[in-house]
Image (cartoon, rainbow, N blue to C red; front, top):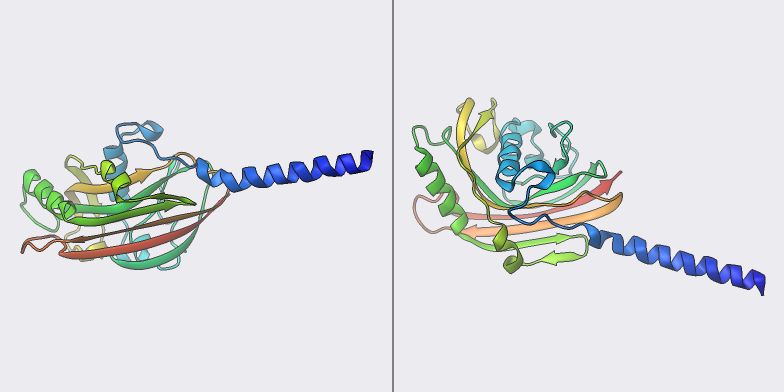
Length: 232
């Protein structure tokens, strides 16, 4: 009876451990808008993310990487946040190793308008152009492990920034030809998570917009991105 009792306790412990392991993915929560994840506001994180995104030459950019092998390029050192990338439209399925304990920055839908693209544009004109783009969004979706966020859950995360400065490298992303410092204004739907537990995680986000006006920054845009995250 003692042996059976020990076996029962061991089996019960394994079952409980399995349940806890399975449910661990549900613990990756999102910081609410208006909070200061890791000491910075959402707009400050967004400015930093765009500085990272626009500062990498197109050939090295995680944005143009279909597999995820470039996901760690130029990630900020000593940062509490790991940046996931966009793909400039289309479908991507990436695998990426991320240090456990870092939060994830997830660009569900995004735009930045730079003076490098529109020389002489005022701060107001940059902001209006970014707003017009994101006013045209017609779908949003995010799934973090087994938890889904539909459009009605994500619209409250729309955030814009004040003008900030980015540095455009040679042969930059988006085909931007003018190099050097440039003003930018960002808008969109961005998510920042709590620290990532060790293990495997799946992040899937997709979005689209249709803008029929003649001066839209992007008249028709669709992105569908899946990250297979290995946190270790």
